[in-house]
Length: 457
Image (tube, rainbow, N blue to C red; front, top):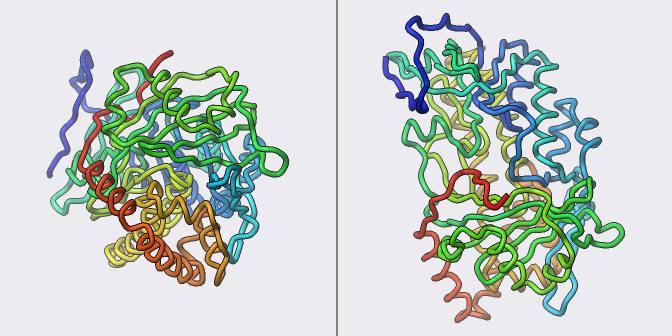
């Protein structure tokens, strides 16, 4: 039997007598959106499910904006009305025009539109709603329980999971299947040495909540606004209580100039974007400033015998286009089918894992292609001057809505967009080449920051 070693914190005393293991069909590490989704769905299929969250809800988290393709998942979970009660209606996303103003990409105009809206949410509320919903559906959902190590049997399947509660007492669980939904902590990926920096993209972010930021008028009031700056990009996300999530994603070299002044760095960066500076006039900060580094990473495998990685525990690229929560929940929904099928028919496990990973990689690659190029002058021009030739603009809106898995028509037109991109890049070859080289250099750089680190109070 092999063991992933523990890394106990200072001052923790290990009790002499080992705890009596709790038998469960599925153990889920992490109580965020991905963990709560897969736990709920598996409990509904009749399995005994235990979910361990190291913190106590509500707890702050980045990623407030959902996509329209989140909505059908929330419907299937039976949680859509609960999210509607806490959410800010989001009908589209907007990007600046070269001549001033902005273009709104309206979700209702997406190719093969499946849902015309989404929500912005405060993640502490959203995550708590889904966690409690899982508990209501029969999940043994426990807070303030941190997983410390996993023992594997001779077949390399998880045999025993060791954890510790808030009272310091040791706990043990004997699952038939282990799901890692630990988010950017990437518990199993890190311990099994599967996690690696994304070789094509690297960035970090500084962000907070402000009150008094100007919102878009009328129907556009719930838009997420995306801007570029010389060292990355920035977001403004309106929330239901009047706050605005404000953040800047930056290349590592630039973020290293922060020198500990997190809010000053954020505001100086935003001041380089005239419209953002105007919209923020008179605004006041109402939350801590946070800095997060090591933004883009991936695990070399998504699954193994008796275990599965879902959401950010498997792969994270960038919060651009607000795809993170959707990809986590969609992957968790697909993962529930893998776990259910493997428990019922063990001989199918490897094929289920392989097919699901291929499907998720294909969809994630659609987002990655746009993200890798978003700060390029070519992409800036195309987003500032959208054209619906052959329904290509509608396909881009569908991508922004999250429809990258189940619509061949959307994916064919996204390939046409790539042709347009290549043609436009040739037309501005010197600038495009300089930007390409700059992005390659930044991808090799690094930023050592905590997953979520409080800055100025």
